[in-house]
Length: 223
Image (tube, rainbow, N blue to C red):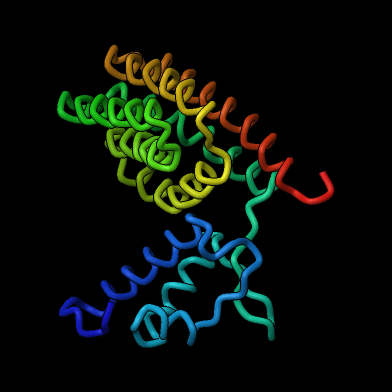
């Protein structure tokens, strides 16, 4: 990823941001690890400027915490963090589903159907990480189909946290039930039923919250 990619400098910072975010989501940089700007720049083959900008963005989105005189550390994602995340996500996901039931195009609905089919195939094959990523894609697609650019902008920073949460908590046992709930949500959107879509979205997020908190609680020392 050299500085001479030929794109604008901000594009390089975006690439570095996406790379570092994915490494955190994948667990290559686990919670509590200190990230050193110079070492990251050397590892990615870029200057320190795009790394600095990427780290600032990751801090704003909750992936990093900066401690005075100590540096930047990968943020934890424990039960308390999940509670805050789900409190926000439940309302916004319900709104997105309701708006998608009103505004989704036939092309957009076919896209959701294809995503769900791919998710089922990955789940049946036991490809848990791929299934988790596709589940996150499904939720993002519903936001896109809402037709509300402000909601899309509000949800965008949550997408990475959702993917990180799915990677931390998903397993083969949860993939099939999640596909079933996604099918119900898709059916409500196809039926142009905003109230049912919103209720199903809330129910789905509540179920995900309960399971995630259970898993994260087991992962937290002293619990």
